[in-house]
Length: 149
Image 1 (cartoon, rainbow, N blue to C red):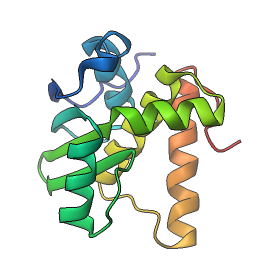
Image 2: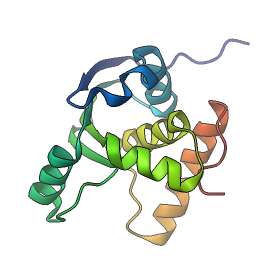
Image 3: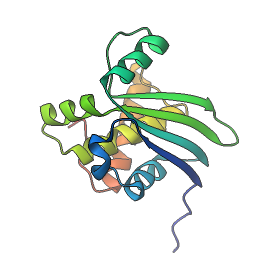
Image 4: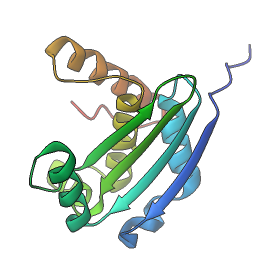
């Protein structure tokens, strides 16, 4: 039996902070995002440093610190259009502090951001549980451990 085709993904991968370029080859980023997609998408992934990450979080979320991932979703239908902004120093620190590989943490955050781009959220406990379950399912299918275990 053939597996259903994954939705089409147009990906732009940008490195304002190139410190993790070697850990984020295009084919892996494509694989991680596609695994979480339910519909076609045009997604820009931008890897940034602390200053840009902090400025974006401050300007758009009124939180004056750099965060791991920001999702800017512009359209949901018929094609998801979104930007996923990941702050390399924050991702690296979190991976180290949580005892995860940098690759596994990037995979998790890209899956997380992709789910946000498709309308998933975690503001309400029931939604958070559903989103975390979907993240875990996708990551396990990709060969990564449950990030919430």
